Image (cartoon, rainbow over all chains, first blue to last red; front, side):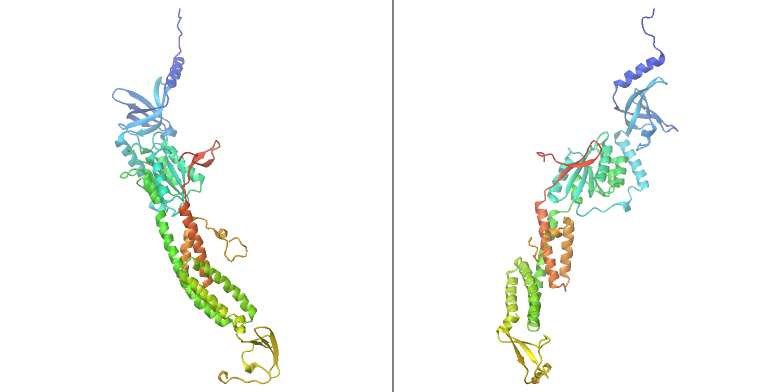
Length: 404
Length: 89
C-alpha cells in the first residue's frame, strides 16, 4: 500500500541534520542578541534576531570563556559559526565560534570593557615598560607582507639605519584570525630569538579594520614578549589596546622605525667629532713627546753603557715609527718635529759622542768613572774610544775645584 | 700588517663585536685621551685603536645594505629566517 518510505522521527531528523549542516559552511551572521543566558555549565545560550526572524544560538564553554566583552540583550553582534541541528529539540541553531560586537558603538563598549579589565590586571603598568635598545641589530616586524606598512618601514629603515636586519613575521592584520596571527607572530619572534625589538602594526584604517589590535590575545602576546614591543597602528588619534600594552607606542609604522633605529646622519656627525678630537689629542701628545724625547736623549746617552742605550734606542725607533704613522695622518708639522727628534737622537747617540773625541772610562768592575776622586793611584782604567779601547794606569789624581 | 714582528696589533684580532660596541669603545677612548696624564705609549695605542674603530664604523655606515628576511615555519614547526627570493626587492 505504502509505496513511499515511512521515516522514524530520529531518522528524518538525522537526514535533515546531514542535509542542513552540509549545506552551509562556517559563516558570519549579524543580529541582535536577545535572551542571553550563561548556564552554570559554562555554555552560553542566546537568540540572534533581526526585524523578522530569530536564530537560536549557542556558544560552548571553551569558546565562551575567550569572549573579550560581555554580550547583553539588545547588543548588535557578528557571530561566526556553523549551522547545526539539535536533534533532541528538533530545531536548528548556530554553533557560535566567535562573537564580536557589530557597529562602532558596540566595538567601543567592548573596547572600554577589555581596557578596564587589562588595566586592572596590570598589563598597562608603566613600571613594566622596557627601554628600547639603542642600536638594534635585528628588528622583528609583525605585519602584513603585502601592506603599505611594511613598504614604509623598509624605506625608512634603509634611509635611516640600513645596518639593522629586518625580520618579518608575516600576519594578516584585519579580518577573521588576524589577531591570532599577530599574537603568534610575536611569540614566534620571541622563540626565534636574536631579535632586539619588535614592531607590530599596520597602516591606517577604520576602527573595524584596526580591531585585531584591540583583541585580548594580542594584548597578552605583547605582555608575554621578552623582547620590547613597539606598537604602530596607523591611527594618530585613537589608541588601541596594543598601544597601551606595548613598551612604546608609535603613531604610524614609519614613526615606529624612526623611534626604533638610530639616525645614520647623526651617528656620522658623532664619528666626525670624535675623529677631530682624536686628532687634536694626538697632535698635542706628539708635541709633548718631543719634549720628553729630548730629555731622554740628553740624560741617557752619556750615562749608560752602549748596549742598554741600544735597547732603548730600539724602543725609541718603535715609538718614532708609530709617531710617524700617527703624524702621517695628521699635520705635516708633526713630521717635521719628528725629523728634528731623529737628528737630536742621533747627535746624542754614544757612538756620535765618542766620534767627537769624548771617551768612556770604566773601572775593573765595569762602572763608569765620573769623578776623579773615586779613582785610585795605580788602578787600571779601561778607556773606550770612538775606535777601540785602551787600558791606562792612574798616575796622579786631580779633583777639579768646582766639584769638591 | 700581517708581519708577525709588526709592532702594530692585528686589527682583526680585536675587531669590535658590533657597531654599538665600536662606538662605545671609541667614546671611552676619546674620553681617556682627553683626561690628562696619559703616557705617550698608551695614547698612541689609543689613537691607533681609535683610527681602526673609526674606519670600522665609517665603513659599516658606508657599506650597509638592508637585509630583509621573513620568518618561516617548516613542517616540524621549526622557525627559520628566509632571505628575499632573488628578483624581488
